[in-house]
Length: 139
Image 1 (cartoon, helix red, strand yellow):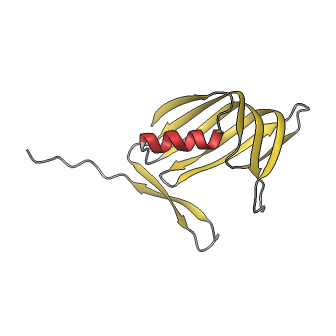
Image 2 (cartoon, helix red, strand yellow):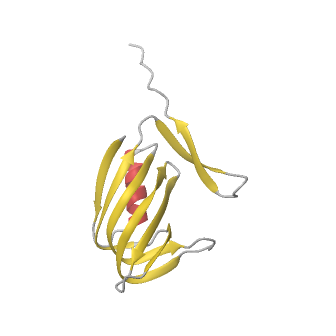
Image 3 (cartoon, one colour):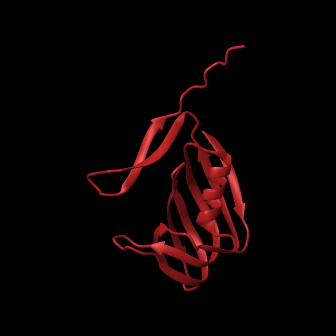
């Protein structure tokens, strides 16, 4: 496992920034193992909901975690508002960093993640595969 720390700046879209670095670096398998920071807007899809709910204000990221594959990110987050009320759910695009977001991404060499339709759940679920060993090239 390799660690990749990442810091986002004010105004960055949390999910878009994570997916951008994932695609630019062509990581085949990784996890966001933790994230902290603040948001001015959170877009969270709650359990059983079809669309995200927007939460605006001074928000603290309490937890952030998820899997990263070539197909994109599957992220869950909990945020606390200025009164300490906490809510959480699936991270959608549109979560705007207020002051900072500090993330730790764990790369998993030797693995390849993808998302495939699971007939039992009806959702695109994580499929874990092996990354092929590089073959020697003939001289």
